[in-house]
Length: 82
Image (cartoon, rainbow, N blue to C red; front, side, top):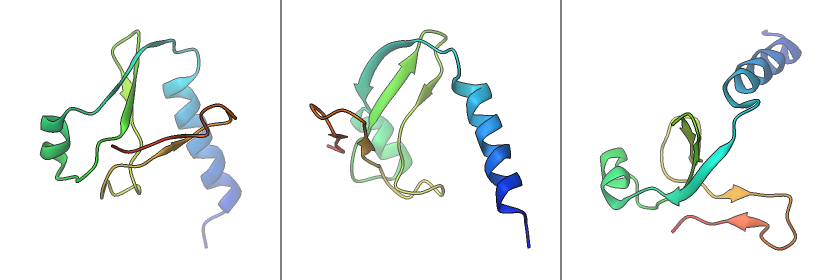
């Protein structure tokens, strides 16, 4: 059985390498054309960084549909799928 701690640490390292130190340039929603190319029914928020890289939430790690983004903000606890 794989070591859960090693798996978690490996993914933390990978995510940190990708995201740490990035600066958000702008935020938008996936366009309808982008949504259609993924075969999704909803459009999630897209966070675009200054270097042109981006992230957006998916329902699961297989990319089966758009996902909501939960935040730590009382003012905006969820950024919804539209």
